[in-house]
Amino acid sequence: MRGADAKRSYTFWWVFQRFSGVLLLFTLLGHIFMVHFNLIDFRAVSLTPEEVARRFADPHMQLFYLLFLLMAVPHGINGLLNAIDDYIRKDGWRLALTWAAWTLGIVVFVWGAFTLV
Amino acid sequence: MDANRYLLRYKWRTGMLAWIGHRLTGLGLVLYLSMHVFVTRAFSDAAGIRDATLRAQEFAKVYDLLTHPLFGFLEILLLAAVLYHALNGIRVLIVDFGNGARYHKQLWAAVMAVFALLMLVFGGLMAAHVIHGMGGGA
Image 1 (spheres, each protein chain N blue to C red):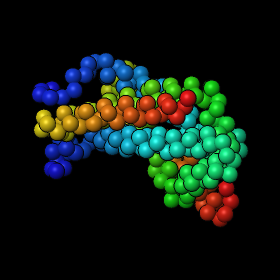
Image 2: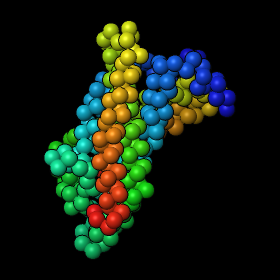
Image 3: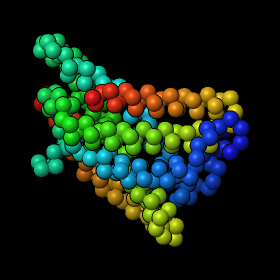
């Protein structure tokens, strides 16, 4: 790793990627099965607007999705940064895209967190 | 863009295939999550409107998009991306923390088998739901 790349601790992020991955197995798959399927009737469903509104107001749901955001956003942005470091050879472009990736991550996390509260 | 420099850097064998699939689905999921969070925000804003008629109107705008058949079929692709990334992620964990490097090829075959099975079942349920919805039902 040379030049103007993100000065990340690669050991920390390597461990985090696996740790968050395990939690995402539960939160992301949990989300998909809570939203898209009714496993008792064993069919796919679309939530009604009333049910969506009820879930927005449910503190358990808020906590669940906060945990999801806390794991998913850094996991995704770290993966994106890995791809940028691998493929973008020009220092200027890599620096610009690294900043863009961090900005995207912060905006998505803040936007998502504000949606929950 | 020289595809060879990026995609064919290593030989197209199991590990490379598993890895490139992991990266492509991962990048797709980052893109999707970013859009999803903004759509969810619009949904939540609509839910907070006090006037009932206006609330129903704003809700319907987002809801109609999300329950559109085209979106429904795209969600099956999304399910495929999530399932592949999740299952291959489990394979990565076994290779890194278990003794998986010795049998990572068999593990990938297992990933693909479970992936195919889950897609057949849950992708099938979703497809049935979308097709049923096109007939006018919810």
